[in-house]
Amino acid sequence: MAYVVIARWTAKDGEEDAVAAALTQLIEPSRAEPGNLTYVVHRDLEDARRFVIYESYVDEAAYAAHAESEHFRRHGKEDGIPRLTSREREFLVDI
Image (cartoon, rainbow, N blue to C red):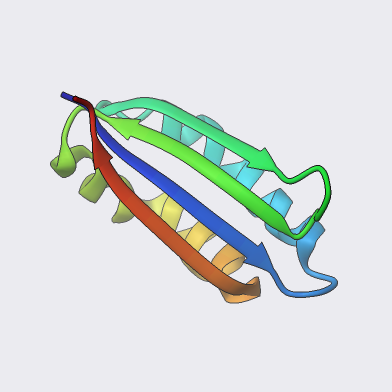
């Protein structure tokens, strides 16, 4: 059973390209994590400030490891997230 996270990020006005760059830096190292199954970043076609990140992991512990990783600290917590007006996350499991 996969542990799934759907994150919705909305960038502050004028920060959308910097958020896109931060998310781009997260893709490859996140996909290389041992417990990662899927890591896909989407950008809204109608509002370039809005992003959806679809992530799946072998279990919740693998997601926790991602959240504590060096690349997430650097590109997510320190770069991307401070540039947001909102951040929402849904946590799901397969049925």
